[in-house]
Length: 328
Image (cartoon, rainbow, N blue to C red; front, side):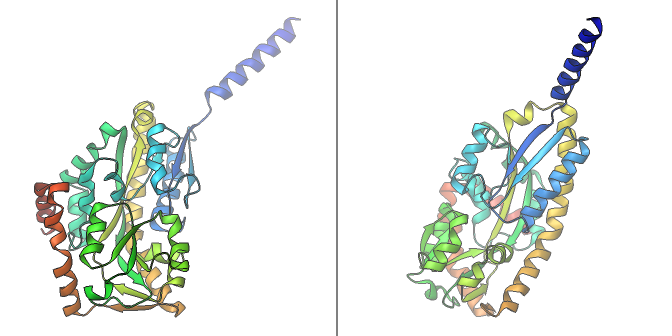
């Protein structure tokens, strides 16, 4: 009897120990393919987080809108249905943090160095802090690169955009950008873009080359203008209540994993975009062309007034501060 009691007690202890040792699960949802810079960095973070914490944390990565589409994912994070996201910076405007739409302004970043001066400096940190009242903690900025325009007709000068239906993210800045070019902006979830291009619901869109290629959009777009007119980046964010509730040592190890994954992501972003552009050209399905100096000047003339137009929405001082910092 005594032996049976000891065995039962031991089994209960083992069972309780196993329960107590159950890993903390982080669901990390995103909308792009695994082989994009963001997708690879998410997998890198998963590996590092699980290694750094000795298995006390398990990261489940859900790519390609498997769990949530563009419009759904931020609400899911705020509700705690997922713990981590890496949405494009444009997503925070509809959430009420309009300052992030500054990243959508055409030609605001003359180079990657200018971009990093902003995201890795005081301005970038202050902007992430603006997410906290929304129940969100910002962990890092991830890079995707400068955007190109794609469509089924050439887009050499702004007049070529007249009447074209161009897909955009939900961003007032991107809406103004397309209207400044003479196009009709159409807001669509990223996961719906390929079919919309294929069926003619929209005529074209803008993307960094890695997104264009991994989503096979080049297969249903005849032309790509190598315009580099705008930037697409992400903020890696986590549910604030979840993050604040983690043991301090776990939070430290996850922060280290995120820092390492961020360094990795920035290193591969430009490489992957270059490889994607080469692959698009190699297929022969899409004609990729550079804008002449005169054409680039015409694009700038059409698009730079968007900065002035958005001062009331984003903030004149913020636009000025970022322009100044990025130009150093």
